[in-house]
Length: 278
Image 1 (cartoon, helix red, strand yellow):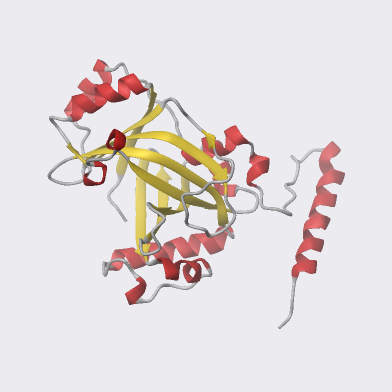
Image 2 (cartoon, rainbow, N blue to C red):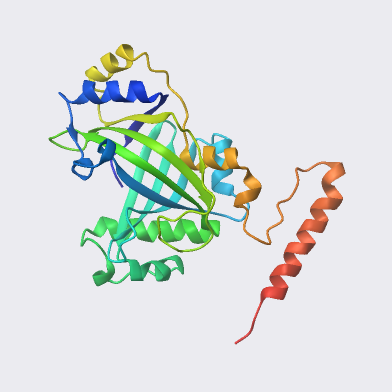
């Protein structure tokens, strides 16, 4: 488990983002993956997993204090490039992350509940295997499956000595429903979630850097909530992210009782009809 990290989010116009870029240059170094790229940014693709009833999504919408997201991250279409299983937890105001990388041929087995072999891992670090094991436990507990593909371009600045301070600017955030395991940059009918605004995040472990205060004052930043996954689903509409064949229950009220009963019966019938015997 990574040390507790704090993330302060701001939704800012492009003009402010460019000003922040120049402000942080004396303090931080550009992430190596952004060097030489357009807008100093590299692409990030996340495949988010959720339950049929979008339980993880609703945890964010309802502001649950101790919540998490399950996502599979990749950076390119290259079949030889690794895939990373990530758990992002929020415990009160702190963020904790676990991450483990595997080679692409092992992904399907992991999502079927199997742990990867040593030669299928990206790193020999035992913490990565622990992260994948925990990911599988939560996935099975929630009966979570692929739900949404989220893409964005990230400009990242990091402290030269370590990763205790990091500033990211995410542009061109897009989301589309995704119920399969295709790890490709292609998206079906994506929508923009925040564009043309930029998601600015100030991230730190340990003490709050004093120069962050100056940065916030200079650019008159105002804290905001910005969940790429939850805000994206809310903007597109929850109905687009329910898996085919799933009938969400209506709110519990007398007028909805009959409809809820009918929906339950249809779901049970669908499950029974889908069973096969070897």
